[in-house]
Each structure stands twice: as structure tokens, then as C-alpha cells.
Length: 152
Image 1 (cartoon, helix red, strand yellow):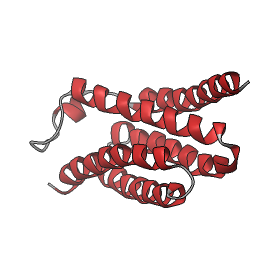
Image 2 (tube, one colour; image 1 turned 180 degrees about the horizontal axis):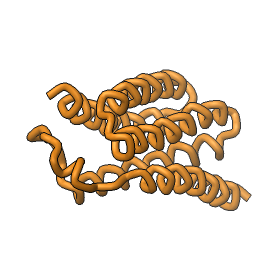
Image 3 (cartoon, helix red, strand yellow; image 1 turned 120 degrees about the vertical axis):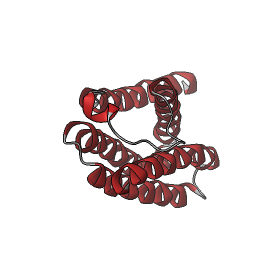
């Protein structure tokens, strides 16, 4: 029974993350506007960004699956879903509306939300808390790159 519950938890988490990853990818258009941007030296090439996002999505799946599996922690899923919505909004305003400043603001909110989720998981799920650290680092990296683009 426990294995089946764990597999269902993973399947539901994958569905949630794949939904917002697909919607985010819909708005990402690497076109002339993006290619003309002055990127900072720490900006990853497109393949590096793809790897970074893939790892972030995998971490999200694991965290959400753990929280679904342990029902007493399921309240934390809502902020993670909100994080996914912020991810969609960031892709929309940055890549579609060409607004790095709005993207920067959204990423600041996302980083704050990840910190709040981190605090929520401290006593509830140590593994989820540990997995939030690289996710937070990824969003901080994106925030720094977006800041550089917006203000330089």
C-alpha cells in the first residue's frame, strides 16, 4: 500500500509540475529581442539554462511528492503551486512582454516565497527543506541575471 501511495504521490506531483513547466515553456521565445540583450558574464547558454530548469523541476516534483505522501504536510503544496504560477508569470513578462524589470520583481517574490516554504518545512520535512536549498539558489541566480538585464 505504501509503494502505491508513493507512486501516486509522484504521479500527481509530476502532473502539477509538468503543467506549469509546459505553460512556462509556451511563453519562452528566444528571438531577436533576447539575442540583443546584454547578458552578464554569469549567464548560462541556452543548454545550461535547460539543464538548470530541468533540475529545478525534478526537485519540485520530489518535494511535492513528499508533501503529498505525508498528508500532514500537504498544506505546503499550495505555496509550491503559487511558485509555479510565478514561474509562468516570469516567463510571460520577461520573454513575451520583454519586461526584465517586471520579471525581476516576480523573481524577488518567488525567492521570498521559497524562503517562506523553507521555514514551513523546517520541522515538518527535513528532506524537502534540504531540497529547497538548490531551488532557492537557482532562483537567486535567475534574479541576479534578470537584475543585470533590467538595470544595465
